Structures are given as C-alpha cells and as structure tokens.
Amino acid sequence: MGPGVVACQSCIHWHQPGGQPVRPDYRKGLPVEWWAGSGYCTRRAPSPAAEDDRKIFWPVTHAADSCGDGIQVDVDTVDTSDEVPALEAAPV
Image (cartoon, rainbow, N blue to C red; front, top):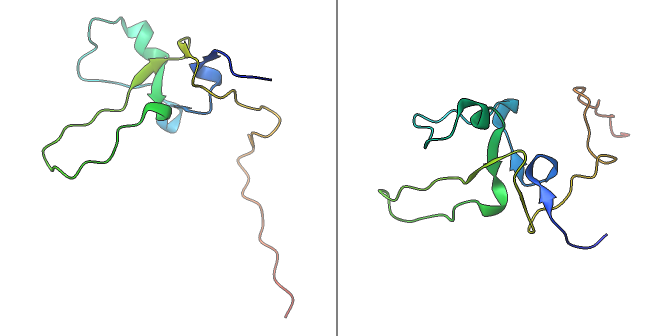
C-alpha cells in the first residue's frame, strides 16, 4: 500500500488525550459539534524553543479531516486490551 490520503481518526499521528476531544477556551467560530470530534495532530508537533516566552500550539484537527502525510493505523497491531502483561521472572 503506497502513500495516500489518510483520515485523521484512522491516523497514527492523531491523538485525543484520555480519549477526550480538545476543549479550548475559545472555539474560533467552530460549532461545539466540530470540537466534539477534535484531536491533536502529532505529525505537525511544534518544535522545541529556547525562548521562555514563545507560545507554541499543537495543531488541532477534526476526526474527519485528512492529509497526505498521515500513516494509517494497522488495526491488527493495535493493542486494545487494558491488561498489563505479567513479567516473567528471569532464571537464576
């Protein structure tokens, strides 16, 4: 499968912290329904800055947005279990 357009919701770079949408102080004229499907694009993460007063923002996208830089989530390799695997003791 070659490069192509990937919807944000099915992209490995799209992140909703704690499974919750972004809740900004100001909605930039977008309706509440749009923000309910929002998340952060980690592909376009801000670069580190040495200046203490430099404001940086993570890009916010909607689940239905898409771009050509995304990478499709491989559902066969995603671990959806909540269980933490037990550690095996090393032989002594």
